[in-house]
Image 1 (cartoon, rainbow, N blue to C red):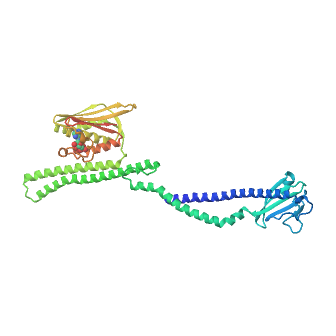
Image 2: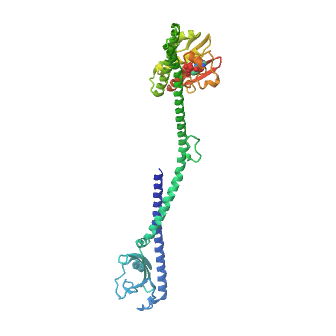
Image 3: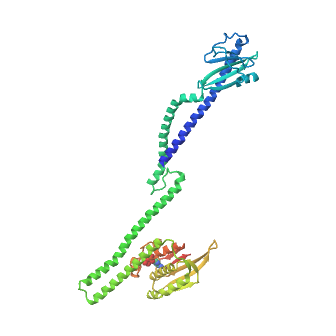
Length: 442
Ligand code: ADP
């Protein structure tokens, strides 16, 4: 980028220099031509004023002016006198434009290029009172001549200027690029102050992405650490009990107890691994959801039936309300979602508590219909400070209660994923000690 900008600067500068030079020379030459003709006109006037050309054949008195040619022609164009001519012969000049003009209008001028001398000759003609034509002329270098004479000097100027341009272009490019380079160094802070206004949205976007990447990386790292930690506990217990049996010192009764502990821990391990696999599947799947027309009431109904037994065990009642509503969703995921919410509502409930599962709809201000699934319980509730965090992976308000009821801390994280993949949103309403309601709005 730097190189390109520098090159462009240099091209612009050199083009400007050359154009200026050419135009200056052209203007200068025009001014010079006018001046020359004016000079010649003055000479002609002065010479005519001396009156020497009124006298017949007496041209000795014609003043000799350095570099100036003087000629006199009769009204037919025959040359009577020419200061540049030794012998008195010269072609008839009647057809020369300046002579013609003088004969017709009183004066005339012209410029002719002489190939033999490589110079331009300027002519000025004046018709005298006696009808003869006085012509004064002067030589000068042609435009090309002047140009080629000045060429070496021009070249030097051009090169000095080009070198100057090169250095300037380099400095300018550097100062132009500097703020952009700064962006990369200050990515994690706020938008650098000296950045171009046009780039601010771009920088903000990159910063946001950068932050997201960092956050994601941190989350993954934490997740991995949590996974290892969670897997370690049941494995340690399995290994411990197995070791005790291995020593052969355990009684038969012990062995049965140890085996039951091993069974419990391995079941926990399996649940954990299943949830972890499910989460990473959902992570990878992103948007490839197998959606179809799904009656969410039917799904909720099945789920409630399935959990009836578990509810009884927890001394909790679970009921379904509402009406049939069809949404466009992945059936398996919907089952998972309802199951997780209802399972939590049962597990974090109180003795003789209740769970209400409701499927309903409503029309919003934009006249769009929304289907709402609500799972409400009269359980222990969640205090305000935990409410925001319960959807995080492995986050549990009461770890031992979660564990003792077979929780992994991943259920709501899975729910959150499923909700996001269906373009739905979730609201949480909970009071500690009173109960919790989670609503999923499609
Ligand atoms: P877990 O497997 O521990 O239940 P979840 O992700 O399903 O994990 O829930 C995270 C935490 O949120 C739970 O440990 C619990 O503390 C809290 N929680 C979830 N649902 C409820 C609820 N209905 N009532 C009270 N607390 C709840």
